[in-house]
Amino acid sequence: MSTDPRYCEEVLRRLRELPGAGDLPPGAVAALGRAGDREQGAAVELACAVRAGRVVEARFRAFGCPHFLAGASWLTERLRGARREELAVWDWREAAEALAVPAAKYGRLLTLQDAVRAVAGNWPGETGSTV
Amino acid sequence: MSAVIYLDNAATTPADPRVIEAMLECLGSEGDFANPSATNHAPGRRARARIEQARADVAALVGAVPEQIVWTSGATEADNLAVLGAARFHRARGRHIVTSRTEHPAVLDPCRQLEREGFEVTYLRPGAGGIVEPQQVEQALRPQTVLVSLMHVNNEIGVLQDVGRVGALCRARGVLFHVDAAQSAGKLSIDVQRDCIDLLALTAHKVHGPKGVGALCIRREPRLGLVPLVFGGGQERGLRSGTLPTHQIVGMGTAFRIAAAEMATDAPRIAGLRELLWQSLRALPGVELNGDPQRRVAGILSVSIDGVEGESLLCALPDLAVASGSACAATHAEPSYVLRALGRSDRLAQSSLRLSLGRFSTRAEVESAAARIRDEVLRLRAVGLATPVAGAGG
Image (tube, rainbow over all chains, first blue to last red; front, side, top):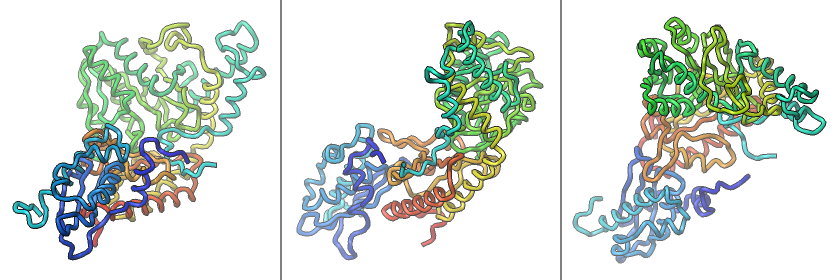
C-alpha cells in the first residue's frame, strides 16, 4: 500500500492515534480556547489545565482535515509547560514546520493559532475571560 | 495482490482481462499493429478491419450505425467536440445554450469558453435529488437556442436524467441535444434513435476498457455539422485528425461488446451491492444519501456523513480507494459544486464520500468497506466538537 505523499508520517500517526484528543479530567482548573467554524471546514477547542501559572495538561476536540487534526494533537504536547505569555504570541509556523504542512493548508493553522491565543485570553483568574 | 479495496469505479475501472487480451493482439510485431490508414498493405487492412469491428460494437451498444461513431481520446474530448463543434458550426442560427450546473467540467468549461466567444449559456439548477426536470429545459429554450447539453448519469451522485423526454422536446423544437454518457454507457440502456440524441459522448475506461480512448456518436440523418477541434491528417472524416490507436479502439470495442452481453446480469448484481453498502452505512446516525433514491445508476453511492470531515475520513481509510466530495484549500474546504447545487450545506458537502462499484466488486469487499467506514466515522466523531449529529441520540 503506497503512502499518500500529501501527509508526512507524523500527520498520519497522529490521525491514527489521535494523542491528546478528548477532555481534561473533571475538576481541572482549565483555560479553554475555541476557534474556527465547522461550516468553514475547521473548528477546534483546546482545553488546558493550568497550575502555578503553566499549562500542565492539554486536550483537544476538533473537526477538520488531517493536517488540522494533527496540528491540534501536536499542540496538546507543545503547550505543556507554557506560560500565558508564550501562548499569547505563539505562531502557527512552528506547527507548519513540525508537521510539514503544505502552504495550501496554512490558513488552517491560523485557526489553531487563534485557539491558542484564545486560551491565553481565557487564562484562569484573568479578568475578561470568555469561558 | 493489493490490500486496498477499490470502490472508485466512477473515476475509472480496471480493464477486463478479455479487453487486455484483445488489446495485446494489436501491439506486437506479430499482431495488428499497423497504421489503419495504410490500407495499401495487408497489415494496415487488418488493423482497419479491427477498427471497423470496434466501431460497430460501440455503435450497437447505443442504437447507432457505425458511420455515426468518431473516435476521440475520451469523453472529455468528445464533450468538447460536441459542445464547441456544434455551437460554432451553428452559430448563425443562434447563440444560446442550455445545460445544468451539475455537468462535468468537460461540458461546463467549453460552455464558459463559448461565453467568451459571445454565446449565452443558461445553467439549470437541478432539484434536491439532482434531477433536471424536462419542463425546466423546455422553459429555458429560446428561439436562439442551438444546443442543450445534459449528462445521462451524474458522475458524483449517480442520478439519472430523463434524456428521452428532454431529447423529444429538443427534437420537436429543432434544438440539438448532446448527452454525456461517460457514466452510463454499458450500464444502462441508451438508444440515440429512441432518445432523440444528436450527440453522445462515450468513453471506454468507465466500463472496464482502456483509458485514453472514447467516441462521439453524431447524428447522421439529417447530417449534423461540427467544427473540428483537431486538424491534421483528415482521419475520421476530417472531424478528428490523428493516427488511430488501434489497440485502444479495439479495447473500447471489446469492452462495449462485453458490456452489451453482460449488462443484464452486471447491473442488478451491482445495484444489490450498492444497496447493501447503503443499508450498512445508513445504520449510522447522521448519514444521508445524496441524490434521488430511485433514479440512479447501479454502481454509484454518494453519502454525506455529518460530524466528520471528508478528507480526514479518506486519510483514515488508506485501505479503501474511495472519493471525497471536498478538497481542503488554503482557508476553506472547497465543497463539491454538484452537492452545493443540490442545496447541501457546505458542512455536509465537505463530509461526503462517493463509493462506486464495478463488475469486479464483491460482497465481501462491500461488507469490509462498510465496517471500516463505520469504525472510522465513530472514531473521528469521538474527538469532534460537541455539535449534535442528527439522530445520534445520546
